[in-house]
Figure (cartoon, rainbow, N blue to C red):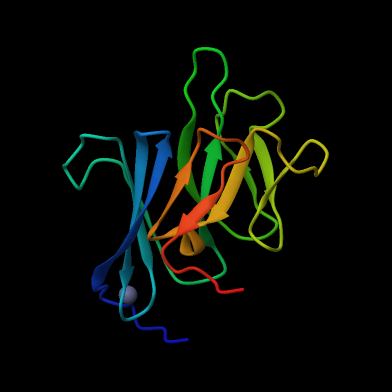
Length: 154
Ligand SMILES: [Zn+2]
């Protein structure tokens, strides 16, 4: 580990398209520093073209990773997605419309578990952003599946 501060050279790393059927719910985009691996993430609604809108913090390399968090709609509230940077053992709070599924503990595999009882959330699903880049998720079915262009064989 170098103590010298990296002058980041961010390159576009890819996008995750979050759909509901034919509709785009949101696009999660990532830029990664080609020198140190620091990552910046942006969340974009459909039709928003300014790249500065919805930009989240820059995550310096370390134990924390970006986690994409999706939740299903309820009543008149549509499904939505956000991203958080967290490491195993962290407690994260995410405002979802689902009771008891708004506070989570980050598991050793970077999945979110309910803080309430350590169980797997029913209406909230999480993926590591690295696994999900250049892919898409369809929230029309629950639990949603992740489709990526880099398919594993067998
Ligand atoms: Zn860097």
